[in-house]
Image 1 (cartoon, rainbow, N blue to C red):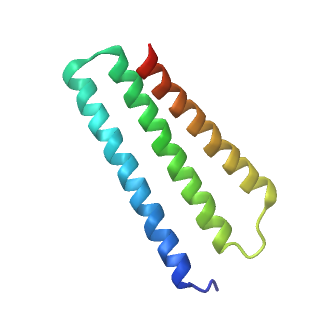
Image 2 (image 1 turned 90 degrees about the vertical axis):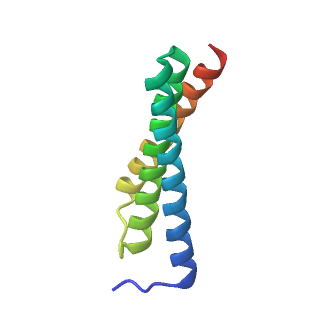
Length: 100
């Protein structure tokens, strides 16, 4: 059984707040894109969506790592690489939306 520490609870709450904020930014950017329909706003929406997915994968990886008794190294490395890739695509789309 996994023991829950106050630090672990704070980490979980902060991860949930981060995920909520990223979803809020994604929703706001989607609404802006639906209103104006410009290419820049489309790439901003796509960027925020990928960043939100990166946050979700990173949070999931952290929670799985903290709760696993014998973590499977290959699985966690794969999840971390996926999270990093999602962040790269998201920030690349945001970069493109700002400088296109």
